Length: 176
Image (cartoon, rainbow, N blue to C red):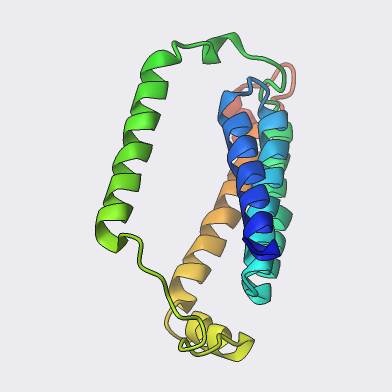
């Protein structure tokens, strides 16, 4: 085992452990913070695999934008931040479905790829220029649609969170 293998195993364990903490915690804000840890560990895996651009995009976009937007939306809409009783559901059916889906996905990947290895020296190196040309050439429309969707969600959260003034109906508030 090389140092890269040990780092990948350690970062993978951190990513899986924090991902489990995301789905098992009862606090929404803590789930968002555990998500930051999971995404950071995945970015660390990308760094170990010498995909620096993908790692920094992971940090900037997912950790820096999506998680902050999630936490901002939770706090802006005044959603319950502490433990919530309505989230106290039976966990065994969810655990069985999760284990079944994970096992099925693992079996599918093993059946599709087996234990094949890739000669990394034969693969052309990915550069920032190639990734940028692909992203802004073929994939520009999905990125723009996603940005408009996130903006609409943010504006919707602001509108929903506005308090209704005392003595006015919802119709009067919308007219202003």
